[in-house]
Length: 208
Image 1: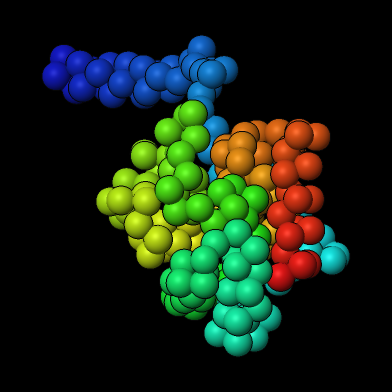
Image 2: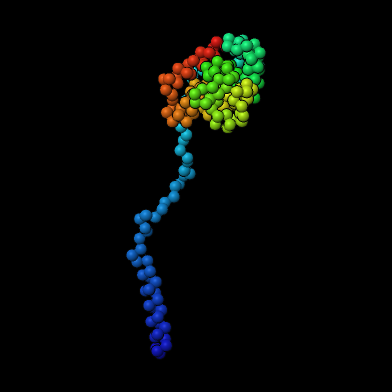
């Protein structure tokens, strides 16, 4: 065997043994990330109870829609003149239809808030029929809270948004009007004081 052949054989043998040792001592890292085998879902929202038995249906057609205007107008006349009663009831029913809202519920809420006084103003700055705060009124597109039609629109629209947020639970929507919806969601309920407010409105509703 000549020298050149011996060198080639030596290099070949060395390369084989070198390849066999490449993975010696290797271990998969203990902190290697793993991946879920199923999609990760977002946390469930706060559970809100379904409408309770005996709660009024919040939809416009549930009480006869526009046919409720005479009854609402007659109830308002306990507190306001015939002309104002007509103006308020007309606005309430029209906007209730627009937002698919039970007009008697809106009327009952307004009766509790202001006794249908379009010029009512609270110490906190809430004004008009539905006692809308300036920031709330602005978000609802109400430029003048003392305007009967604008306030009726804003109150109805806001009430409807609460009904939707609480998935049709009328009691929670009414409570949210007083305490704010976030407080109701956070506590999954409302205080005894707010409970009195809710009951007052439902009592008025049954009288209209």
